[in-house]
Length: 170
Image (cartoon, rainbow, N blue to C red; front, side, top):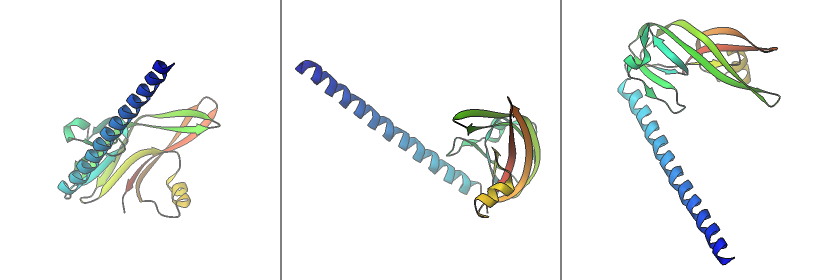
């Protein structure tokens, strides 16, 4: 009896120490990612910073890797682009929960043309609400909408509306 109690206590300590080490490790990784993002923005203040929440991304027909992206705080890809007009394409994904059922939503390859200005930060992602609905919900505290591409996605018998929206931070 004493031996099994001792084993259980040792296992609990082991898992506690393991959890603590992993927690500290992930906090360090997150802190480094955040510092890198801040440094990236300040080093590229003369460019447009674009947060891309998509996969299979191409900019002006070139692979995203050609633009030396970094990974942002939310695991998005972040690039710095000289001001100008760009064609950005990618596959956008999001999830929605309806009646305790998770629905994964994925777009086809979407292409859009954007004029990007130096010193501004842009975010391109799929949203389940229109820019107007988000603005009303957030009491006019949303960023400026640069472009909105409405999508109609049919999943089974559910009709889901989604939007690819490019916001420019205010």
